[in-house]
Figure 1 (cartoon, helix red, strand yellow):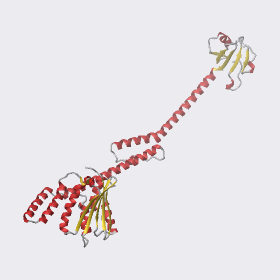
Figure 2 (cartoon, rainbow, N blue to C red):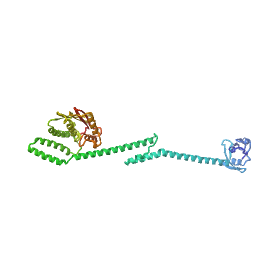
Figure 3 (tube, helix red, strand yellow):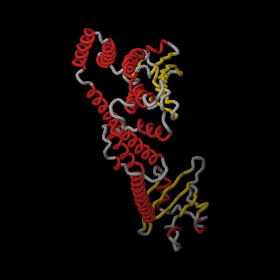
Figure 4 (cartoon, rainbow, N blue to C red):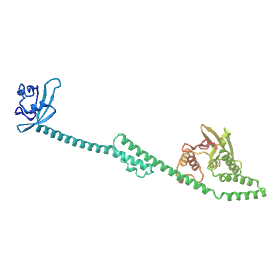
Amino acid sequence: MLVENNNPPHSSVQSFLMDSKGEVLASNRPELTGTNLSDQEFYERIQKGGERFFIHKEKKIKELITYKKSDHSDYTLVHIQPVSEVTQLNKTALNTGFIVSGLVLLFAFFLSWYLSLNFTKPINQIAKKVNQIAKGNFHHSEDIEQLPGNNEIASLNRDLYEMEQGIRQLMAEDLNRAEEKRQLEIQMLQAQINPHFLNNTLNSIRLMAIMQGAQGIVDMITSLGIIIDCSTRSTTEKITIREELSVIDAYFAIQRVRYKGKVSFHMYCENDTLLDCMIVKFVLQPIVENAIFHGIERKNTTGHITIEICQKEHDILININDDGAGMDHETLMHILEEIQDTDSSHNTKGMGLGNVNKRLKYVYGESYGLHISSKKNQFTQVVMKIPMERE
């Protein structure tokens, strides 16, 4: 040490500018300025050059000496600092590095924990539930933890829950509809009592009536045979409107004999091409039967039943009108409620209006079916709406 250091450690560094003769031109220590250092051991090593720094021992104190010679003059900038101080600075820097590294690791841990809690875990949960839904597993919707907040993940989680509930509801509705359709099919099968045997029996009775000259019986059996034949010869669910009306003609032929002119029937179609459109078979006869038994039969005078067929955009409307006894508002509301009831145990037995309405909705959808209006002692109108389908 050129100058004794009685100041704090941070002032032990000595820096100075000297010329080639060892004369100190300037220094951070004023007492060094103007002195000559050519007699110092480190001066000779600096003059020899070839080193950027070296360790010099001065009074048992090791010092780190670094220097830089000017390329354009004979001046040299020298920097002297105790090795112990440099070591202490390194230790301080190392300790600071350890502390900073620890803080960074701690921050990374808490950041990872936060991301896992708020992002990774919910996303994994949603992915797991989507995988369950893809496999058709809808039995653990309660496993979807409802996430708080209004962020995108919470919103996606709620949408997934609502989607699953909607799918489960649709599946339940489909199962119910399939079961109701199966029950209807069972009812229809129960109504078909060995049709081949019945046809053969009717033909035998018809031949006996012809032999005995009973033309009225012959006509009734012929009409009944047409109805039975139409119901059994086709395994399809739909027939043309023309074929359906032939069943109504045969049915009216039987009822005219029974009621002896009390019932009249008229049919009008605005376009004959509509008669070639398809309709669910045996849906008009129950409506006409209701018009006779609950409308015309209760009158003391002749009743009239009219069937009108017209087109409305892409649909077909079939209006069945009668001028029978009609219904009051309370009775009409009860019937409307009954035919809309999806529970077959509360609907009209057999092939009544309720079953007709359900069959139409099953085949065509909820926007199709029957609409009923009536006024007591004046009229009853049943409007059947079906889509226009060609054969």
